Length: 209
Image 1: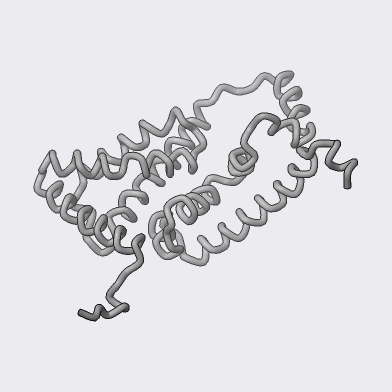
Image 2 (image 1 turned 90 degrees about the vertical axis):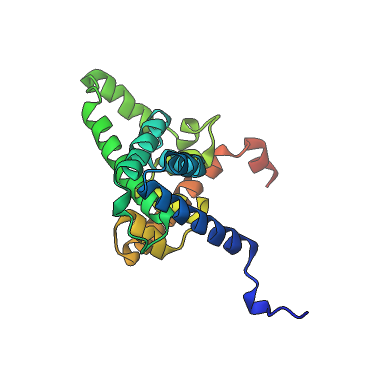
């Protein structure tokens, strides 16, 4: 039996189609107030949401609360999912908006830094970038320096393999805005790597060159 090669989908695409079919069936169950369907959807999205929210906020203590708030919306307002997009796009969009609100709330409630401590902190931040990342993961430090909306684009693109069109739906912005954020994020990361890498080299390596 000869199989039409055009009917054979790549493994990742096949898995994505299967997941979406499952997610839509679970959403139908949730709209019918099926608790078991909600529990299955929660379990299916927990780790993906955990990674996305952490990368977007860089606040590990915020992750669990944002996941719970996100999934609470899924349970309480399932009718707002109208099947015109992927279930994952809808849920990640909710998570992103919840993460933004949580970040803003945390920023407002943060205690003010005394002026003398602020001066010391400013001086430290002007120190050698290499010293600031000593013993830390370079990529993590670089991502920390990006604005939240740029980190979200990086994570959704490389961490979750989404297309710009899907990311635009999640972030509720034009696709060209997603492309612009990616451009500036790449440029910023490249600049940081160029600044940090030479200072992190072993001096003996420079002598050998």
